[in-house]
Length: 295
Image 1: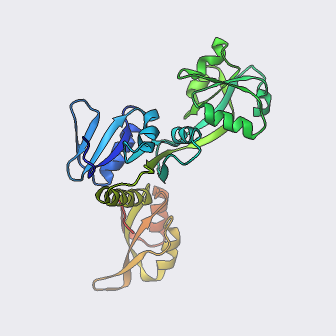
Image 2 (image 1 turned 60 degrees about the vertical axis):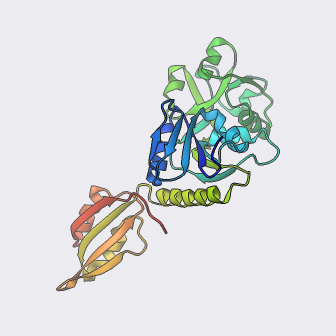
Image 3 (image 1 turned 180 degrees about the horizontal axis):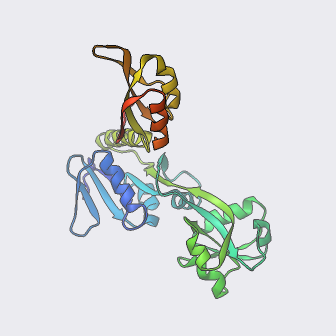
């Protein structure tokens, strides 16, 4: 029997979200060991267990309360939610990985170039509810054909006139002589939580993890920059620092006309940035990655 004091988090067993999901939990401070069956990662320093399951099963496991939380593709979560009248789970956080889009695509020589051109046509997809909802919303009456996989070959097999499928680079579409005609849904990974009440210990732990997730997301791509600068150039140098509102300015021991400036840059720091700072009088510049930040 599962220990109710341990937080259970469902993670994709194998796929594009697996590694970044596990990395997120590591960045949140979790150390874990993996069971022999590779289906459970046991938290060693926190009472958290990661259950490695099929992506499509995660919304159901969280909705039923079998798992307290899960990391899943936003498209999968929305497809599942459309089958329910009430909210089956709470989308607690939208994450910074797993970007993709659900697109309508047609054969390049079909003459079907707009969603309106699909009226009366067959559209193959693994996401029937999202596809039907979109087509209905724009007043298009088309037949949605459910396929569990290999959606992109449906037009070649004569099973559909168009497809609605996930696209990352578009390479698979081009290989199958298909072209995108419309983006139905933009998607990123999200962290969903159970609608069922949790024991106090698990609830407190979940809030703690969400706070740490916020800290990780807050510094995505950020850099910590330290430099020395003439006191008279503080304003000019601050303007050159990307994504900085108010840097920390510290006096340099035994030096009245120069200061140390420390700042978190929320935008990329390129070589051109450093060259511009040097041109403004900055020296001793050091750029470091930011792993986490707690407000």
